[in-house]
Length: 334
Image 1 (cartoon, rainbow, N blue to C red):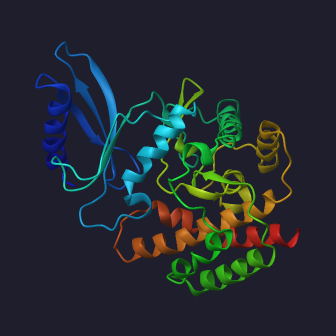
Image 2 (cartoon, helix red, strand yellow):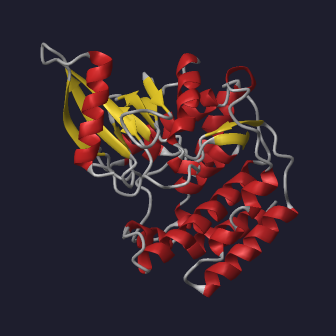
Image 3 (cartoon, one colour):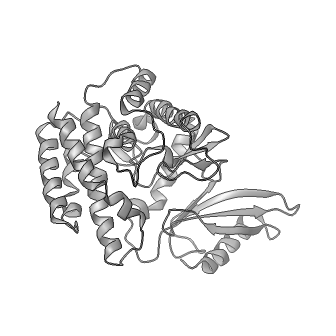
């Protein structure tokens, strides 16, 4: 959506909700969200500013995954009510007179995300500064694990079968620009299915849980954001994903996470937090590597063909074969 078109609709909405004296200022696209997320402030009659975030999909795009922003509203509201550190959602509309698409507006929490491969300048790139951020991320995940979806989100979504979390990527990795990637994906998929756990415990998963989706302010976790690909299913996907992101074996000297804790340490922090050991966690770490490598297969193709310009995927693409290889190594030890 053109930012001036967004400004016009947003101003009309804010005036309708907060009165004609309220003004929208400092509207800007949020980093790394492909035109889906924008930041803005509202000035009241005394020029006091309140920060907000608006999410809305592109026009004419099928509502699915990260483009189905409206589905996040009941999720975020339930999480916030349960005490999970997520932004409040004061407004959410499906059909509405201000835009041709659904939208949600959240409060803007203090802090910045720790983008693990290239953190913003506000973060020191030292082990002493970075390692506590990874630690807080693992501890908060253990707390999130306690969220009772059956009580708070019973009608939100049906649980996804674990086999679907594997086979759904077949049509994605089939589009890889390099044939070797397809062969490696097929081999990894086969190995995952051969060692399939029972999928318990079932519950809410974030889908991309790592410090790049955590807000930190003055060294402290202030919020968990970006729930676009969350769902109900095997909850251990999130600890597996966090461990995969931290595992330097998945990455290259050109592109690698900054001073992560070891995957083993992250697992220990998580299991201590939930008070239980899960023998299946290494399998989920392998699943996470397979999953991200498959996503990269598609996005590298789109970038190379000029369909979606994003040079970062070329850097992530360097890790595609290491991710498949690492996943197979982990599975071979189970």
